[in-house]
Length: 360
Image 1 (tube, rainbow, N blue to C red):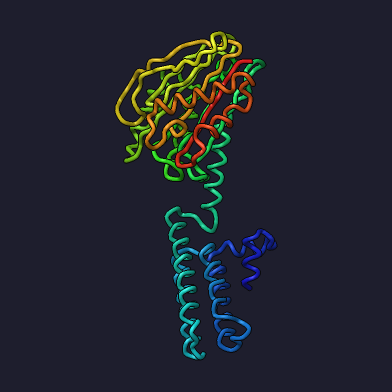
Image 2: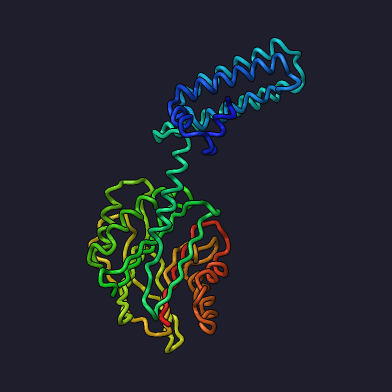
């Protein structure tokens, strides 16, 4: 019986049985029966069925049952554990086994309580998070660029977590002549910032390209203010490029400055812009830095996790980034974003993102 339930979890059960198991009373009945069968087997055939087998239905219940139903299953497992204590000779190992069963029950109850907060059944919560993560990744994919333009975007999350507080939204105009990119760094890091990044990426992705460029950051700021989060601030850099001429505008909201490489002079220029953090106070105007990307030129957008480090000034980190970028010039910029992140910020203590855009 328990084997049938495990088969359903693996997606191998027949369709009719899977539909029946969608009803929680059926699942609870099967797991209660399995628990009682294990309890009887522990009493009458202890050499064949160990007491620790009671953890198996508890684990299954933690995945498939609601919190209220799981309490009944835990009670049944506790009854079987007490029955084995009364009927069997108590050994030195019994206390350890009882602790294992109790810990398993606590873990199962924790899983059920977490799902109850989301209002989801089974493993739907995990599936939903995976789907949201994949959507965030897909939304951050750069659009295809015309001949003569290339880009590389690299994300690295703090402590190699699945979610990052850094994200990119990008689009091209209907006539494909204009590229718009926003690189955003949400306060915090890892999973804590990742949940806010999931929401903001959808909102900012809807704003990007739908508004005149000068209105994007004010609208993003207003949206974030309306959320009224305790940790609601973010930084962002917004790039608009005319792909026919290479002319661009960069606006920043508390973000580290973009860096422009001029192939003609071999000089790296830091594009200083002014603009406060998103989500802190009202702001209607973000003044742009303007320029033009000519053949051989490159532009770098990055988050502070790339250049900040304990006991190191931000300016020193930017200088280090420019120094490492200088090594790319002779060999070309292809693959350069990955090389720069590895060289400048190999530590995974913070979220890091780098976009390298260049003309060939």
